[in-house]
Length: 115
Image (cartoon, helix red, strand yellow):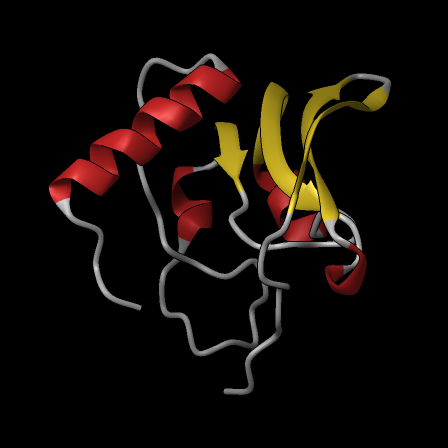
């Protein structure tokens, strides 16, 4: 995947701030699955106030949920790849996840990579 231009980085950061209410955005390119070719370790900075998952998932990957702070928000495209998805904002509460449906979307599916 080619790197984002400065304009694309600023635009994506503004979008993330708008959806999550966060003032500061730090990007990490990583996989939530330990058996992948990705060498990034996002867990070292956990817990996170907000996580943006930029690929479709039918449910929240447990490693990402574990790294989300209490009161933190996770934005992701939920649903089956072939049927389209719904962009949802999930807040981590003491009672469990609280989900808010935002908009219909289509994203690429999450895939496990072989090492």
